[in-house]
Every structure is written in C-alpha cells, then in structure tokens.
Length: 245
Ligand SMILES: [Mg+2]
Image (cartoon, rainbow, N blue to C red; front, side, top):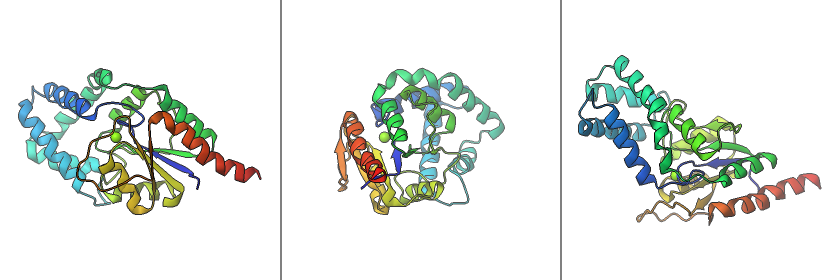
C-alpha cells in the first residue's frame, strides 16, 4: 500500500494545541473585538448558531462562506458591509496574537517536506469553518507556510465541513484522487476518521487526541506525530522502490 495523497489535519495534528483552549481564546477575542457592535454574549450565540448551520448545510451550489453569512446577517441584524471589514481586521490584527496557545513542532515541516520529496501531494484538510486568512495564519504558527499544498480547505472554497462524508468526497473531487490512494491524518476520531466511510485509510495522531466517548471508529493506524515520518518513509518509500525496480 502506498499513498499519492496525504490529507493532513492542522489543529491538534500538524499544529499541536489543546483545541478547547484555542477555541476559548478565539471566541473570547472575537467577541471582545465585536463588542462595539453587539453584546459579546449575544455575538457568541449568533456566531455558534450560524457555524452550526454552515456545518449542517452541504448544498454544493453554496460555499460555507455564503451559507454562514446568509444565516448570520439576518440573525444578528448587522449590516454585512459594516461587519465584514471589521472581522477582516480582527483576523489581520488580533487573531495572530492567539499564537501562544499553539505548541508548534519542527516535525510538521519535516513531514511535509519529506512527503513531497517522496512524490506525495499534500492537502491541508482542516475543518473549513474559518476564512483563508485565519487558516494561513495557523499554517505560519505551524511553520508550514509556503509549502506547495495541492489544496488547503477553507470556508471560501468548500461547501461542506467535517464530520460530513461530503467534506472528504469534495476533497477527492477537487484533487482528482481515488480514496485508496489517500491517507487521512488527524487527531479527532469523530471528525477525521469519517474519511474511512469513503475508503480512505486513516492515521490517528495521539499527541493532542480529542476525547470522544461515543465513537466506535478505529483508525487503520495510530501513533505519535513523531512516529509519522518513519511511517511515511516506509509507506511512501515502498512506492519509490517499486518504481525504481
Ligand atoms: Mg484536529
């Protein structure tokens, strides 16, 4: 078995962090930033409600971004012309200050660089509930900005979210790959192992494992992030050796 495509989760996988700590810090920062326009409690309720609507909606004709705003604007009564630039400024000026919640490791860049050398194509398969600017910022935190990814899933280019199968189907369509040629690497059994339903092999990274009581899913492989380079060397190396013979 060898894999031409690596689908790599970001938060808690390539970018070690406590997801709950990150979300709390983010929600606190964004609601404080928006306080001149809306009471923080109400803003948070609306943000989370519209995010849920975005995650549930899988209509291929509407991007996650479109679904979010079509729900958020009527829900809040805020003018879109007014709120969009304010949020953009949040992501430019305030979001980078959340970097200390992450615990980046040089292993992330080593994995990407070596996988590319071994001929794999890379996808950043992070849940596309954030705009590109916020995902690119976290790629910088992880030390992997500038890597030639085939695809980075963002709320602008996707119409589906984890944990929906459709999210993985959309990635396969986008990169023109068969499920059996892909390996999904992630830290969340409920969100990342759904890729199995399409026949994608899964590798669960245990460093920042998201605890999920209800899930019956078992990964095909699991290990620490530090084990992944050796795993990929063996799996991707097989292909190269086969090609050389
Ligand atoms: Mg994750």
